[in-house]
Structures are given as structure tokens and as C-alpha cells.
Amino acid sequence: MNVKRVFGAVLTILGIVSLIYTGYQLINKSTAYTTMIVIGVIGLIFFFSGISLVKNTKDEA
Image 1 (cartoon, helix red, strand yellow):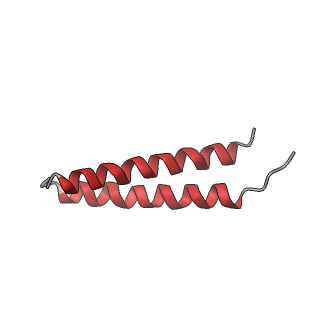
Image 2 (cartoon, rainbow, N blue to C red):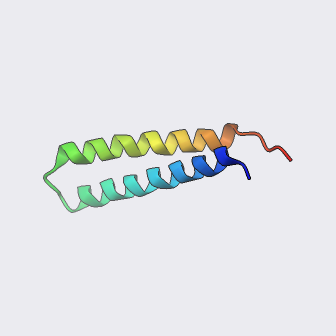
């Protein structure tokens, strides 16, 4: 079991969830813009770091 790939998948899923939450709050016209910006930036960081971790990890049998 490759721990890096699992951790990358978890980071990617957390990033997707936080980006969806940010979009949902923007659509509902929430007034907490600072919180949405922070959650959106953290979501982007999680998403891209998870994708790169999964992509750059080599399969070893």
C-alpha cells in the first residue's frame, strides 16, 4: 500500500470539498468574504498538492 498515493488522494478530496463549499457560499451570497477566501485558497493548495503528489509518486511492486 502506497502511503503517498493515499495521502495525495485524501488531499485532493479535501481540496475538492472545500472548493465546492466555497462555491456554494458564493452562490448563496454569504457575507463572510474573508472566511470564503481563506477556505478557497486552502482548498486550492490541498487540491493541487494532492494532484501533484499522486502524479509524481512512482508505482513500486
